[in-house]
Image (cartoon, rainbow, N blue to C red; front, side):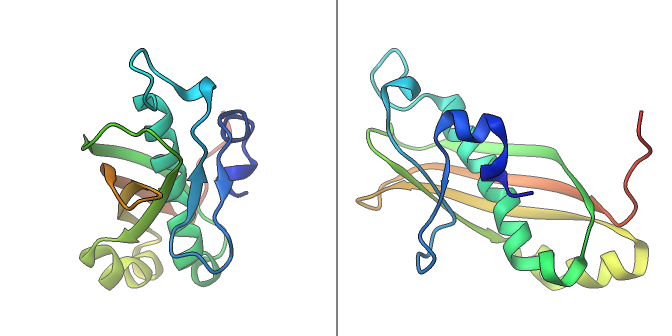
Length: 144
């Protein structure tokens, strides 16, 4: 399932970037997402960034790892500038994740991954930087 398929993501207005774009996802600046200052609400930016981190994992590793269980374990964020327009989400794995994710998942059946996310407006202004740590396992947890 893609992050943009979730009902919450659809309600916010998250959408996939065009196929040839460098960014992963987009979030239009709508009245629903305004905060008390008229800029984009921090929660909307966080939601875009978290969804983009999942999208980054799927695009980079989905075909190589097959079906896995993945969940966010930790997040560090920095809101850089007020967002006053549409946001574009850019993502990449950190160096350790890029170097070791596939090997560690194959050897141990589980791993951690760190995905770095930048949100920028259409002029290229950085509004948000985040570091999303994921736990990934080949074996899904038991159903509760």
